[in-house]
Image (cartoon, rainbow, N blue to C red; front, side, top):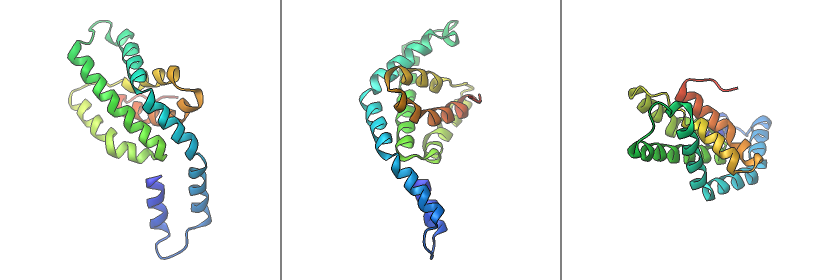
Length: 157
């Protein structure tokens, strides 16, 4: 929404907002209550979502050969919390660019420097589907998909 509003302001510089831009703003505002409810549900269930995502990650083939130690779990949990909160804010504001600029590009650089193929957002999506309502999880899907694709280099269908 912030990026949308910035773009509308740029395009309307010295003129009226176009009918197309007004429709875009109205469309964004029409889903505000659903996005706010999903955001609140994520905030309330944050602990359960992260715990479930960590369980799924630790039970996966990815860590079968080399399980995470306590420090690894703590760091993974910290990274997941930051990612979850950033994705939730981007969903609330309906702003993929905000997500990319504020967290993902930074996080991507860190993980690439460590030569890690981060899969946490995939497990977060699975956990979210088991904790939130279907409608709430679906609102988060595009943001988690973007996060997963940027962090893992894998395209998700």
